Length: 389
Ligand SMILES: Cc1ncc(COP(=O)(O)O)c(C=O)c1O
Image (cartoon, rainbow, N blue to C red; front, side):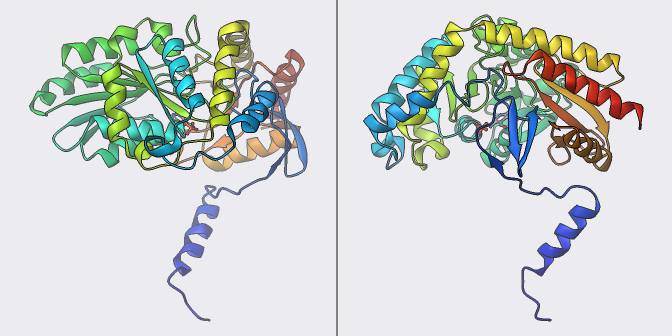
């Protein structure tokens, strides 16, 4: 047999499969909403982040109209010829929505996190990053060249102990998810804001899963905790509750000007199509006009969590529309996900490296689009499966 330099990949894939960590790409057909068709099977969908139910229908006509007027491709990076009037309008609307001075639109939330962190820190600086932060924050930290101190999840005492030693560094950045994407719990933002002030650190919060859901106006966890003045950099995405695509950073005018000059994923990447900005504008309007979507979502999430706990599930510290059922080992988690799928429900199993070893879980993502009957049927199916284990 002829060997090639890529043979090691086959060995690695076999190893991943043996330990239950191999991912296989499935194909969705048709739009996703409260239901989804994956590999030809129609399922009730508890796997998407379309928390307000805006993705499948609400934005379609807006996007089609924008393509007719503005065309599709942007042609270049925003700094060259890519930034159109709709991008500018969306940035102004995002700043207003977030009650901030200015906003900058990125092609994705991932790019926004990497761009913001690498613009704000470099060699000679130190970053304090929560152990459960999203991969895009982790990669931004790694790329920045700064010293990275990962603190145990939500551990304010640990941070309080570490920060005094950080005064020798040029700049300090504390970065955290506002709402953690797999565990559904909230960061202790009041304490973090107080520590940032005490130790002269910048504080950055990623609101990816909280924008549109938390806070009286749907601005996210920073609004929920009332710490707008203590958080210097806020990142969000239009890909989850806003049902579209595109990340953003909001903050002071000078912060945004600096990031637009320095963030490599912004400077060296083609701007997203303007139709995406049209979708973002329409979604923001829905979020503003229809607050019942987020209030009902959170109250149904509370009820669902209580019912899951009552049938014996461990939902960890979840306090949001993201509700994990913590299983532990990846093989058992995937068996549970498969059994749910056979019962007609799509609930993704989450394994390392997305979560730490020993913390594999089923991730229920609740949407305003789910009916009471769908939610009741899910609880019943989970209870039935737990009873036969
Ligand atoms: C916490 C968090 N931040 C950022 C992102 C990236 O956002 P996007 O999907 O828009 O790139 C995600 C997406 O999974 C996320 O969960």
